[in-house]
Length: 70
Image (cartoon, rainbow, N blue to C red; front, side, top):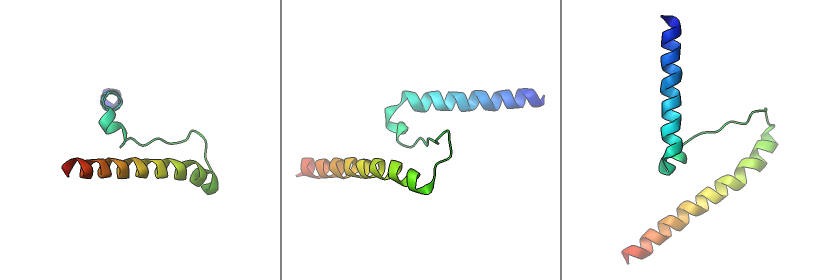
């Protein structure tokens, strides 16, 4: 019985992951973790450009929506 419960959990998580990966709109909310530990400085240097790019994309999208309403 315990093995079946664990199997059901793994299957549910696999199903959720495949559903998320199939939908590009929800992919933005998916969290990824590095395989090896990173120092804070290394993590910051890797993430800051990504966060800046995401923020810029969101700002551009909001500006575009505002212009369309005018």
